[in-house]
Length: 143
Image 1 (cartoon, rainbow, N blue to C red):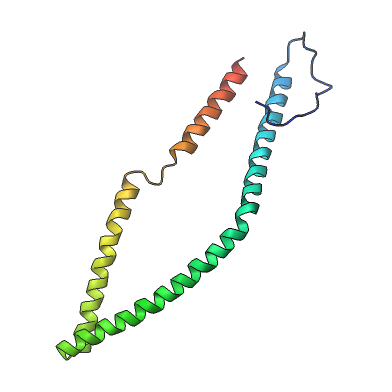
Image 2: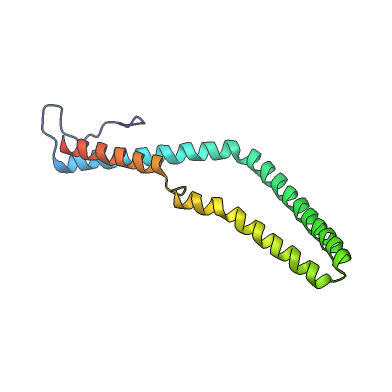
C-alpha cells in the first residue's frame, strides 16, 4: 500500500528472484516512512487551511468569555444585594449565593462524570485503525 511513487531500488532483486528478509524489511520501512510522511503532510495542509479561521474563532471565544465573566460578576453582585436587602446581612447573602453556586457547579459535574465513566475518553476509531494497520503489516510480513 504505497501512497506515493518511489523510484525502484537498484539493489532490489529481480522479479524472478526470491526477496531476502533485509529487502523485505527495507521495503516495509520505506512504506512505513512514506505512510507517516503522507499523514504528516495531510495534517499540515489541513492545519494551514484552517489556521486563520481558528485564530478568528479563538479571538471571538476569548472576547465572549470575558464579557460572560463580567456579566457573571455584575449579576452575582446584584443577587447578593437583593438577598442582603431582604435579610439585612451581607454575610448571609454571600453564604447563600456561594452555596447556590457550589450546588450548580456540582450538578454540572454529574454529566461530566458519567461521560468519563462511559468511555468518552476512549478513541475507538483510532484504536480500530491501529489494529487494522497492525494486522496489515503482520499479513504483509507473513506473505
